[in-house]
Length: 267
Image (cartoon, rainbow, N blue to C red):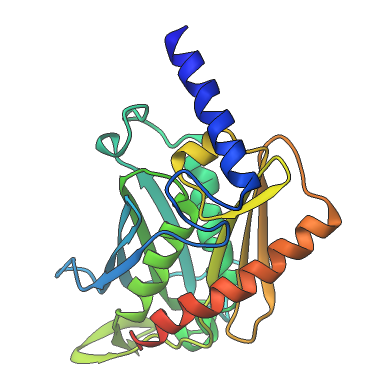
């Protein structure tokens, strides 16, 4: 009962502050938490990054290896994103198969990178319909403090930008590694996801864990370097008005431009 009363008081306080254009942690409604990006944190990976978005922390590794193409995509390399939330990251997380939330997290990150066509997968073909290069991006949430979508997305993009692609040659229709020769991944654009929550009539960027607990709806919008919206994911029990969606789109473009400059420094 005491916890319920405390939660209600926190919600009322949050609602009062939002009406004044303020938040519990002092941020403006369209202000992200502090973002730090560190690359090269996993020496044995082909690429890696650690991202801290406020107190949310994610470590992502990239593995590159030859593989067979998907049956209907023989002219493209493979891109697969996975995610996990470590039990130490959140007291409510338990070991075991991925939950629906974790599956959604991986799919949103994957879709943002794939639909913006960040990587030219056509350049990863070794032998059409038989052998291609696969890029596997694995994110582990070390500290869950809200907005895992953007934290995992930023870590994945940064890890790809820091990665190297080994060179393979085809001999007898099989890929053979060429020792000591690597190249950068064929990056065409820089995707940036921006997640927003609606609490009452207010839209807040980069919701904290407390804000996520009482939000009415959530939306993640991913844009490319040309400012085009390429992917969108909605969550929560309720929706957005047309005016609110327009506002979310404008925020995604504005915030995305700032984050993209951080990625450009990694290229």
